Length: 153
Image (cartoon, rainbow, N blue to C red):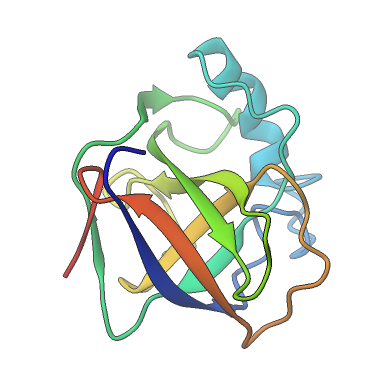
């Protein structure tokens, strides 16, 4: 990352759709597990990443993706759901006091193409290389992002 910025964020509960925790029969195993093969076709290999998102609130801030690491348009990942646009921004997550930062991507299904399960403007969904079983809702983490890729508002 060229000029990184660390943002304090709070772990919050998401919809459970990306991971499959919502048990929505349309998305067996979760949306992310269904989408990963399509992202691979476009050049982003997430096959070794955790198939769920860590939902991070950066309130009172909001975010704007300026220059995503990857953007994929009109991804038809589901037989009956409409095609969607997705952007990804490389990032790192660290619990304060820990030495190791976990690499990942901000996962951003574009709201203008997303049919449902919208996130508030202060929530970032992050796909991590490793499952973080030591995190709980309400925990604070540091999200490290390149300032040229994401802007805080």
